[in-house]
Every structure is written in C-alpha cells, then in structure tokens.
Length: 425
Image (tube, rainbow, N blue to C red; front, side, top):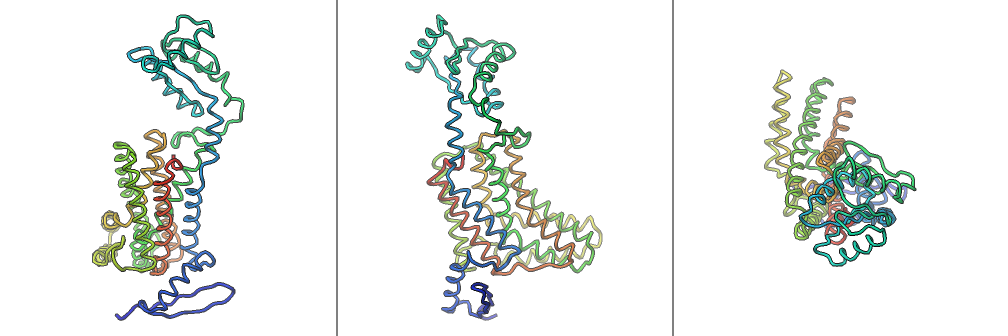
C-alpha cells in the first residue's frame, strides 16, 4: 500500500472537524503537535483512553507527591523508641533480638535501636548513666530502656518478654491515639501511611494491562470467536487465554521479585533501573510521535502471522479440550513474545516492592493484586464481547495514545528512582 492515510476527529471548543493527512506530510507533524497540545482537553476514545489517562494522572500524582503524611506520622512516632543495650557473644542478647523481631512486627509503630556497649563508647556511658539513675547496679546486658523505664535481662518470651511488652504497651505514646491501622493476613498492616502501596499496585497493574502489546492478540481472538455465536464457548476460550496470560505474567514477576530480594536494590542497581525506565519511557513517547519508526518496544510484524495462524487454528478445534489447550499454548507464546514490550513495569514495580518491609506471603499477595489489575481490562473486554457478541479492533491511534501515557508514567518512575528514591519506601 502507499503512504498511510488516516482520519482523525477532534472535539474541542464545541466544534468538530475532520482532517485527512498523509504519514510523511508536513500536516502530519503539525497534527501530532496539536494532538499533544489538546490531549488534556478532550476525550477521543472513552472506552480505553479515558481510563488510561486517569490511571496515568493518578500514578504521576502519587509519585510526584512527597510522602508528607508518612513523614509526619513517623516523626510523631519517634517518641516510641526502645533502646536495647547489647554485647556481642551474649546469649541472652541473641534471645532478646529474636523476640524483638516478633514484637516489632506486632507493633509497627515501635522503633527499636540496638546499642552495642562493646563497640560504642557513648552507648556504654549511657548505659552506666541510666543504670545509676534507675538504681540498677551493676549494669548488665541486655538492658531495655523505654520512656525512662529500665528493664534488665532476658530469659524467655513467656517471662521477660511479657514484662517488656507490658511495659511498652502501658507507656507508649502511640496507645494514646486512635488506632490508624488494620492487620490483614495477606497484605500485612494497612494504615494511612502505607495505604498508598495497594493503590499504587492496582493502578500500575491496570496501566500495564492497557498496553497495545498485551491487548492486540486478545482483541483479534475475540473478533475470531464472534463467528462461533456461542457465548459459553467464547467466554471459556477467551477466559482461558486471560487466566493463563495472568499466570505466566505472575511467574515472570515472581522471578523479578526473587532477583531483587536476592541481590537487593543497591545504588548501582537503582541507577540502572532508573536509566532503564527513562529509556523505555522515551521510546514509548517516541512511538507516539513516530509510530513504527526506528527501534520500538513493540511486537514485531514478523511474529504476528504466526500468532494469527494459531488463533485461527483454535476455531478449527471442534472439541472444547483441544481448543482450550491450543489457546493456553497461544497465551504462553504471546506472553514470551511481548516480554520485551512489557518488561519495564514489572521490573520497576518489583524493585519498588522489595523496598517495603513485608513478609514473603505479603510480597506474593501484592504480585497477585498487580495481576488482578493487569487482567482486569482484559476480563472487562471479554465480558463486553460475550454479552454483545461483538468486538472492536485496537486502532493505531488508540495504541499510540496508550504508548504515550505509559511512556509518561515510566519517565516519572525513572525520575523518582534516580532523584527521590525515599518516596518509594
């Protein structure tokens, strides 16, 4: 075919106009500039674009807003500090540390500071001063100091552990305020200060799902399944595709999570991820301005005929089980093909997730929450297609706008990783 001819319709200032332009013409560049200029003021594709724009704005606001509330709460909670004077080689100190790990998990507002008297002269002098003031002489380790109250020694959790917990609970400043957190099995402690992590997880998972690479195969599959005119079989086959895609993506993200839990997020790794986020974000914005020109993080056209052939082969399966096996295989293959296209968000998100002090169950629960957001848009499209027995093709323009939004969010993540890493903790 010749140069790409497109038709774009803008709605603003209560006027409507249509423009026909060619891909390499000066008008094309002028229209792209206008597209960027008028992007915040009009809504072109409410079905996909409005949701993506809202998610993108929400994520950028979350990332660019300093955690003022968290800092203020943390500062006020610094009065609830437990000083523990310890010494290397002390078996009672080792028992105390093991117990305090459990105590801290049950009381997230409690700050514990260990002060080694054999390495720190100031710690040794402070211990002697506190012991003299409390009338406890000679001083020993471990010694616990909380709100000018002194407790010396540790035998086991059922004796000294209970005494220490009772001392903290009776005198803690935190207990004078209303509880601002809820304990959950999967997500740990949810409070005003850390509620941003579930919201961030859902938002970035949803935005990751609104990715042209992740949507085009499903939309093509739905357009093929429409010809079956069988809602039950259509829902079963398309639903299997969505579920298997989510499972493969979960395994992919779990691998990233294990990598960052193993090696940690050092300064060098943080700068590497920040640079990667900036590069991916820049390429996505480039794809909006110069679609399919130069290097692009998109599924190559050479891979699409094979995907189309496999999708058509699914319809040729008369029995349900072979069709489900074929669509599951297609989902696995497509997810591996699009890894380069979608690797940015999982890598950045799992790196951020490992900076939170969570249990292994909580880490994987957040991955599950991310996957729920990731497949939510696919599940919605399947539901609409099954109910209406109709489907829509992902247009080039919608794909370009989704690329722009994901690119802007990725650029914001890169800037935050490089310049404001404390905002992500």
